[in-house]
Image (cartoon, rainbow, N blue to C red; front, side, top):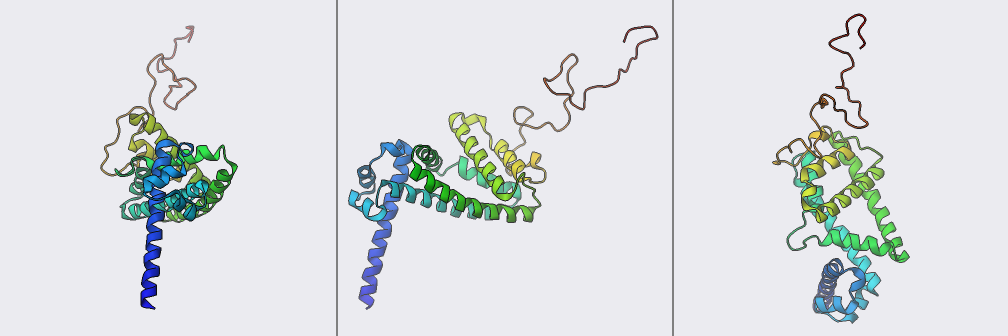
Length: 259
């Protein structure tokens, strides 16, 4: 009996190892070459297994793709939850969320963000993948909405919409900023991303929220002014009638003189 249990456990371990190898290989290849550019044989070869192993574990390339998606989401949730728990302030927690999107680890340089873009691109062309993504997104949305609601209550934040709406906005912001940084690395400083997240989740002092240890950016693009900006003489910002515009003339005209 003991011997049988040991053999069964070993077989399960081998299956788990093979599954893990295939998922890692698929994630890397899909991100690097695009989903349509990668064959089942290529994934199996990169994992040191046969194509039969892919079909045995996932049924098809489509099944493999969806399994990669599930593994990715679980990995992100696990890592992110741990890092947020170690953060010492709400702003630092938002910085941890952004860091997981914008600063991937050395062993997976940008893989997961690229993989998500690939999945969305595939979903726009494949109804089956699109439906699977919608189901998984709906589940994740409900979970994330509940987490956001509890977090907001604990720190006194007031999100711009209901929890699920805010989660959608946060995801869209981070995805867009990550892609912007990928194309133009210097265009999205961490400071800007964290302030954007803080504004969406309604964190008190959102205009001052920034990662711990990072200096406040100098006035310029993306930096909200600390006080109203007075227009230069003869200059008026297009479409803006700010509160600093003078409404009375300090030197009124003399009697009979045109103002």
